[in-house]
Picture: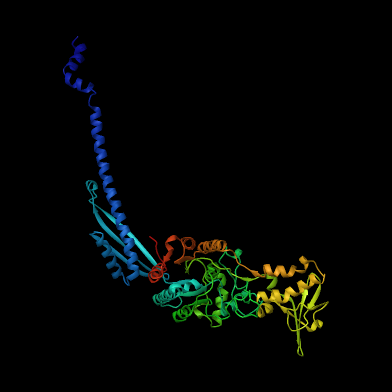
Length: 544
């Protein structure tokens, strides 16, 4: 019986322990205490991590600015270290270590460095990390290879107001000098100067290496058509529409040719691919103001002179000694080998007419025949509605007393004039009323044609001979489209608006590669603006 009752006696010997083991009260408190300890530990770790990230962000931001500053002034690793140290100290950053970087790498001047700073920890020290090392790296590379710049300068009539053109000349020549002085190697920087109003004069040199129309050789204004603004390229083989040699200033006056619409000299012509500051600045200083404004046409040339499709033209000019031999490989291919830049200085956007002569009256032979032999001079005009020639009775072309016949005066002895010769001798009004009106009127009076038929050539010439360019709104849209095409090729576009309206300034802003590259100037700050552009063109970019 003793053995059977032993277990019961043993349990009764530890009543307190039994109660403790069976009591479940207080277990949540223990769990909560453990969780609280874990959360406090994690919170402490998070605090250290947050402090680390904030310190790293501040250090990185300061390094970015410091390295950019060093790139503009330092000439050695020691100077890089000095500049960076000054920036870090300004931000109350101490106990840092700097590893500077200053070297040439594949044609690039590389300026940079790494900064390290020890950050004491609050909680991680209990896990064996009394401090964390904060690091920040930054590097700027300055391109010392090819920089190709097209400088597009407005010379329209409004540039005479308030001395705007003179201020632009001062700012641009200083900019050219600065760019070429800072890049002493003549192969690094090249300029093309593209002056413009409503006529863009290509100049004798460019016209000799591009495929200009052969209607005449009196001048070199070109007109690009809207479908060409979707791309930047113009090859030496692409047909270029040469603006007709005609007198627009007096087009409503009955007189002989007096003033060419497109100037025949190269004073305001494009200066392509040059790296001599003296030559470039002399050309800029010689520019004169007048006329309306067609920046789209000028920007087409500016982009074309940066597009490698034009390289054979530069090669030919270099071979002929027109441009420096070292620039015969321009424009270089799009890509990292060259930074390509357009700077458009504009007093507003599109204005004026952008004229040329309608194709029907621009090429080929006219209906006008001339006989001048042995003291006898006569004019004959072919009249398409009658199929006959109207012949004057004297040397005076406007002759309502003339007569009809089946051939010009004395047949093949009369010389048929080309349209280019007609426009080079008389104004629009003279051609219309001295040559086309008499035959038209007499065809009606003589019953040889109906009013409509008799005046068909006269009316078509009157309404269409002067061929106007796109309306300003459409031309401005073409300008933005052309700028987009250039930007897609990697061309960096800066635009500078001089006293333009808000709408015009917005158009120029949309043309820039980004809004930060558009400047609105009142004229007196042009030097500062070009200084800012010069710094940007230093081709510095943060790569780390």
